[in-house]
Length: 314
Ligand code: UDP
Image (tube, rainbow, N blue to C red; front, side, top):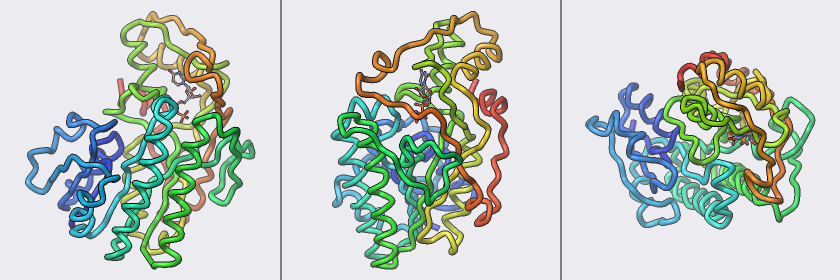
């Protein structure tokens, strides 16, 4: 098949591209290289079934020919990284909302099956765990840029469902929880690559806030395999599906674990949120996915334990 991956030079997109190439597809990556990089696609750039185009999903003219020739589309191009989105609120909103609308509108013309990547950020600070796909979304003030990002991903989901309902565009939405693995950079704020880099250099490991906040991390390999299965599952069309892991850890324990595993002499230091992000920043205390729907649809079960995930990134 001819498969288009928007954002295919990003962390998750490049793993997906690699897997789809292994499965003998032709893979077209469309990426503006804002947070993605040529380094991510270097391992397979010489593959004859791989094509790369630097371009923005905000440019319909550039994007249209790639959507037109695709048999399937994975839409991953988006503003990512909490730190990054807080520093770039306008670009975040435009890329996520207008960009996704462009991709969906073009895909709808040819009814090309499309998978939209959303985020567990959509749940906001809802505190009733685990999060089921039908759960309420709870957001704070508009002055806190993080909620603008959460809102933009919610709009993407609403758009995907609306195109499915009104135009029968075969669209599936995945809500990704914290996804990590090799090639992920800490440059845009993600915690595990940041902690590993700090620990390896014996520099202070920066735990934000109290460090009691909890997250569940999944390995990118588990996530991309699930994405491919969901793209090809007709029952997943018009559905929103959580993908992640339910093994949770506090950020303080994560810092201790990474320090130990890397045999680092780093100090672990606490940084107030307002210094790390901004004065209006709000964090979510805990985030755990309900994975029943993914399990029922494709038998999804994460296979990597946290220690193995960290080891794969060291
Ligand atoms: N975090 C941290 N130190 C860092 C980077 C992040 O303590 O250097 C915390 C962050 O405040 C959050 C958690 O780690 O509570 C996960 O952050 P990340 O940006 O990886 O993903 P999020 O779950 O916030 O989307």
